[in-house]
Length: 138
Image (cartoon, rainbow, N blue to C red; front, top):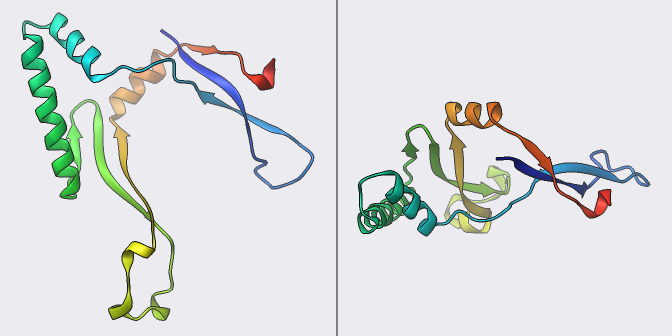
């Protein structure tokens, strides 16, 4: 198994003109979806596919609920998920507390995944890299 990557253009880190820059980016080779995961779990255990799907569906619903409650979801040996908010900086002194609208300062809401250290070590130790063609390196 190899992690595929591609060379893509990127902006100049110092803003200078006249020099093109490139970087390596991992390239997605496909999707491993809910159905495939359920089938793989079914084949590697004695549990029926219906039971696997029921457990995964319940897990998904509980994760969504607890993320909205502000809790960190810890999936042992995989990592953790937590809701994340990115906001603009603002001077506290220029906005009166009664007129403050937090929603106008929020840029995006997302989910942050932090992999477990052992998972990172495994991927880094067992990785094989394969470059796929890109328009920059034709």
